[in-house]
Figure 1 (cartoon, rainbow over the protein chains, first blue to last red):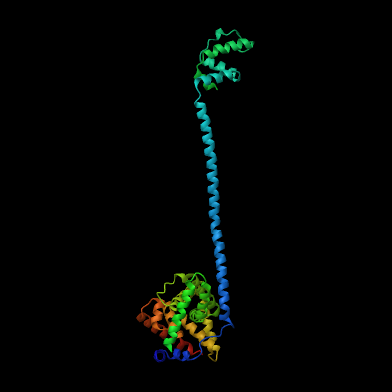
Figure 2 (figure 1 turned 180 degrees about the vertical axis):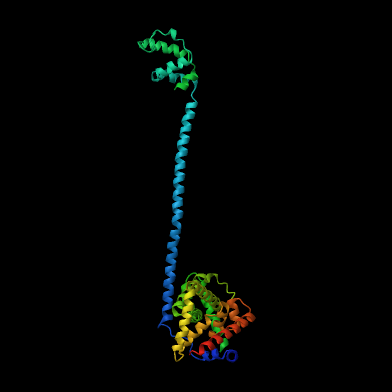
Length: 168
Length: 193
């Protein structure tokens, strides 16, 4: 009933369109189009799902590389911290030496001191060279080991511990 | 007769929704949906986009979108109006993309089409279809959609209103304008046929 009324209205308002409506308006379709549609849609769905999986993996790649960088930085920071802490501990150990230990160390390693430095320090301390047995330009020339040892003993007596520590 | 068909349609819709929203086997529901609605959706899309190739492409996009978003279907409208809404949006989006790519070419094609119509001596189904498509393509989106749904599919204003989200009064006005424009177009072309 409604359809009849609608067609009547259409005829009044648009006679050409009403006339065309009576004819077969639908063009031909490829054979089996709708029976094949289901397969094609499911194929596309599968393709899209696999593409979406791939793109998710690709999207992850930058994240992985960022994580790799972060891991590398953390590792480097850990190594640097360990080295810094280790050195600090060594310095602390050195810093905590008692004056007896320092004195013992100096006596034990006296032979390792540079004699030139010691003489230079003696000059700085205004050491009295007249007490020195040799008169040559080089005070260390023609001096026997025993004389030198004796001289160094007297020289060391004139240098305080702090100056000796600085010479180490 | 109509009432029993409506009841049957409603039962089928409910069955399809149930199957689609079940996590166990949504593909079964989707197959049933395709059996039930593919052809109607195809002709609706074809009326909007013209060629079979384009309609096939848009129909597949529509069905894939339906499959992906069916879990979010709240049943606030009929399943078939929801399907038509998706199909219409897909078709109009497709047309916009096409227009952007081929604005200049379309003018040329229109002229060629008119020229070829003059050469034809009779109007078979394909020729009528092409002629109407050409007329419909001149309409703005809203009028185009209302015209296709009302003229080709003979859909009620209530259902069109559900699809387009426009008042029935507004739809009647749009259809009236569209009808006049297409009729005028046909009268201009008629002299060449």
